[in-house]
Image (cartoon, rainbow, N blue to C red; front, side, top):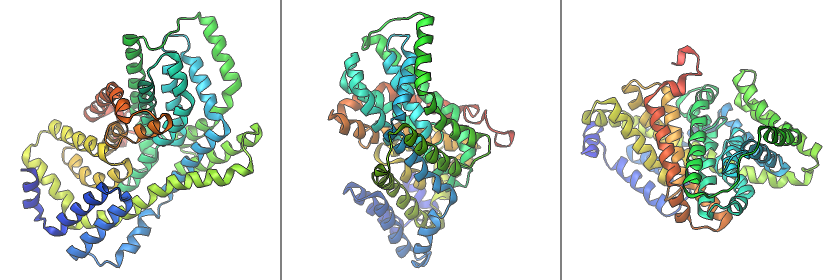
Length: 442
């Protein structure tokens, strides 16, 4: 019924259906996402004749010709340098010292260090790989079943795109024309809410199944332990400090903050003698590979977005949805369902560039704040990192440990449920994402 209504509204023909079918087939054949998007866009433009094909080349370059996108490779490189210099292990030491006073302390420390890493790298997969290598074996030694330990790291690493600075917020800001700095500020409370929800879920699971032993310590012992960890690793927090202070004080743009963080991290690595010039080629190649996945998707999404806009698909989608119901609460639930379903089968970047321009008019139609919409969208898509069949974080931790993806996914269900609660909270309570913003955005 919905598809028929959409078809009647915008009079869709094979110039729309065939490219969509082509896109689905190419994705099913494991063709790279950027190639699938580009092929669908070219076929759509050729069949519709709405735009000359000669404009595709121009669109590819204008789609990525944005100063804000320069921040993406910089944050990726910062995360890579952070791991190679050993600074990420300092985060773990401090996180463990913070939580060692209670039962289940190392599990909680794992979640906290995921959040700390997220505050620098802005990438889920990088956080899952870095934290997983440091913690999964120790979690198993502490008493956690290996599938659950993997699920805990995979869930904690979801904060990579939810806690600012986040690559996902840079991309959605570029697509919708919203300041990345504003989105970073709005994402602080929701990102921390996701982190706390994962932390609480692990504490509850540990209480129910007694995974990890340990006991209470006196306040003096805890303070002494924490002081020792901070004394030996306080300098690691200079990097996130620079990023947060620079961006939120308005002194640095996200790109400038990323560049500063890279330079400072490299200097610290040389001072600590954990980084040498010989490490640079592999670091740059590693970061370039990650960046090489993201930018082509953004580039090829530009002509696709233009074709969809000319064909009136976003407007038709709004008209068809609102013809079924005009209840804002049901429409928000529908958007969340679409986002979660999309997150289960495709990565965040293509989901953003394809769905954001289509769903944003629907959010506007029901009076949803555009900042709230962006935060809701990214958080809902973040759930997809620990849900099959794609579940990128599941694949990362499975690759590290050799554990079955299905076993990890089954143990991740409690984390998915608590994350969904936060998504609903963001969607229905605007203050969650707008409280820290200037009055003009509220």
